[in-house]
Structure formats: C-alpha cells, structure tokens
Length: 184
Ligand code: HEM
Ligand code: HEM
Image (tube, rainbow, N blue to C red; front, side, top):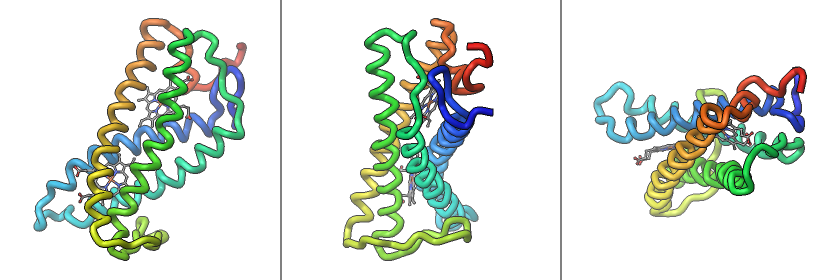
C-alpha cells in the first residue's frame, strides 16, 4: 500500500485524511446550524457544542498535518485538465486551507475569548491564549460567514469532481478514492 502521493495518484494517507476531513466538515456544518437554535432545556444544549468543539479541534490538528504532508509530497499530474481547469483547481484546493484555518481559529476564539479552556472529549484540554471583551461576538460572526463560504467552495469543488468523473470520464475522483492505478 502506497503511503506517499505519486505522479499518478494519491497515497493512502492523503486519501484517508481527505475523506475524514470532508465528512467532518460537513458534519460540523450541520451540527453547528442545528445546535445554535437549541433551547436551554434541550438535553443536547451542552453536549452538542462540546462535540462540535472537540471534533473541530481534532480537524484543526488534521488540517495542519495535511498541509505539511501536502508540502513534502509530489502532487499527482493534472495533464488531462485544460489550462483554465488547472488554475481553478489549484485556486480551490489551496483556498481550502486558509478558509478552514480561519473557520477553526474563529471557532476556537468564540469558545476561549472569555478564558474558558476547551475539553476535547475529556481526552485533553486546549487552553485559552487570548482574551478580549467582545471578541466572542466578532469571532462568532466571522465563524458563521466562513462556514457558509467553505460550504459554497465545497459545492463548487464537488460539482467539478463529479463533472470530471461522469462527463469527462477522467480518473480524478477514482484516484482520490482508490489511489494510483496498479498498471499506470
Ligand atoms: C469539506 C469537504 C472537502 C474538502 C475540504 C476538500 C478538500 C480538498 C483538497 C484540499 C484537495 C486537494 C488535495 C488535498 O490537499 O487533499 C481535494 C482534492 C480532491 N477532492 Fe476534495 N474536498 C472535500 C470534499 C470533496 C467531495 C465531496 C468530493 C467528491 C464529490 C471531493 C473530490 C475530490 C477529488 C476528486 C480530489 C482530487 C483532485 C485532483 O486530483 O486534482 N472532495 N479536496
Ligand atoms: C470545519 C470546521 C467547522 C465548521 C464547518 C463549523 C460550522 C459551524 C456553524 C455552521 C455554526 C453555526 C453558526 C451560526 O449559525 O451562528 C457554528 C457555530 C459554532 N462553532 Fe463551529 N464550525 C467548525 C469548527 C469549529 C471549531 C474548531 C470550534 C471551536 C473549537 C467551533 C465552535 C463553534 C461554536 C462555539 C459555535 C456557536 C456559536 C454561537 O453560539 O453563535 N467550531 N459552527
């Protein structure tokens, strides 16, 4: 099993991280929208934000690892793309990193701006490193906007992946799912 990415496809680690990240981000988006409307008497009033923050912190760690992993790996060829598609794909792929980082950091600031620590599934805690009055509200607005922007980019990215798969019949989606071909 290939660990590293090659010119013909993604290795197992990049693929695993990509799909865990995709599921995690979509799940947190749904959970976030649902939990902000919960009533104080709901049994999920404390649990849902705790789960949201815990998964968010784990995804933040995964994002940082993925970024480093991306930098030290070869990138699979994109020769079958037109010049426009290649630039658009680079823009979208690299765009995810600052967008997700901003989303996660703003989430961290909403939760810690008043000095609270974040308990990640009672496993480890993340301390508050910066406190300022009103920061919680600003971070909350930024978090909401970045969440919608991320989902818009995910929609565009998924539509492009499906177009390459079903219309162009290229291996783009296959190599993100099952890796490089055994007989390239
Ligand atoms: C939150 C959701 C998602 C995020 C954040 C995301 C992010 C990324 C990023 C950053 C890349 C570049 C490679 C890398 O650094 O891993 C990538 C590649 C890719 N993604 Fe996603 N993705 C998401 C969801 C999806 C979905 C739902 C699909 C399929 C419908 C998909 C299909 C692909 C494919 C096929 C590639 C490889 C493109 C290529 O080789 O040029 N992604 N994705
Ligand atoms: C990919 C990661 C994330 C996504 C997609 C996401 C998505 C969302 C969404 C859609 C909301 C609802 C916004 C609203 O309607 O006001 C929300 C709220 C929230 N998120 Fe996230 N989030 C992510 C990461 C994080 C992280 C890492 C943390 C903290 C460590 C966090 C903490 C919070 C908190 C505390 C709220 C409630 C804000 C309020 O009460 O207004 N989120 N999130």
